[in-house]
Length: 266
Image 1 (cartoon, rainbow, N blue to C red):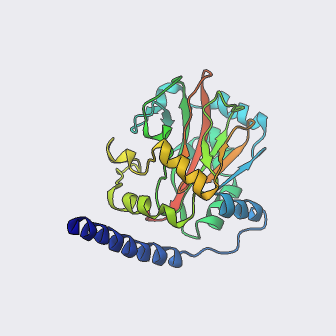
Image 2: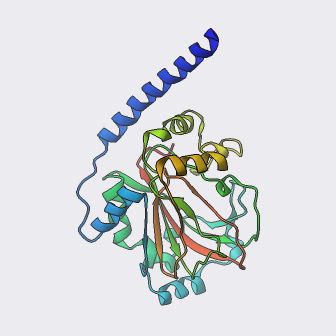
């Protein structure tokens, strides 16, 4: 019994010290008043951890992107075992300029993360594998305890059959997160590409379904299934709990703009 109590006290002390590190980090972030054009989006991000922006690009722009996207042979298989295909460094491809050169995205990222917000990955993702996939992102998970914001642009209508992301609104904040945040802080590692170092650490940050149910009940949180029309932009704080869903239709095409605080990938 004494050993158990001693171990629990040690864990508590580690969490206290980690929380000091966390508070110091956020106190150092240079977050300024956002540009007026994106202020409502920042307000909703702060409240819910997610905001959906219909019509960010027009349907015609999305159709043009799909027509002029690179051949699928130029895409690479995800290293995180979720069967997705990625075209990396997509911001360099002229077909994607309408999205990656849009100043609204940078304004949102800087207004939420801070002046040191930088892109971690800018890519196009294609999903074609239907049904159940054994992968970490099919479970509710948090990516990090540090700011990590993802913007998904839907290039076609995304229904519940098109693998929409599901987000647990409001789960990006709260003291209940601290034990898992500490776990990501101590265990999660990335490769040079910014993805998980290996297929063991990729599962760090995942919650079991019963844990998610307890969190929802205790804190009054609700799931948001992010369906939307072509041109919809889904922006979410990846500190919050989110998960991928099964693909039923033939494919899903999205562009991804993924931002972090510079130098703070983990």
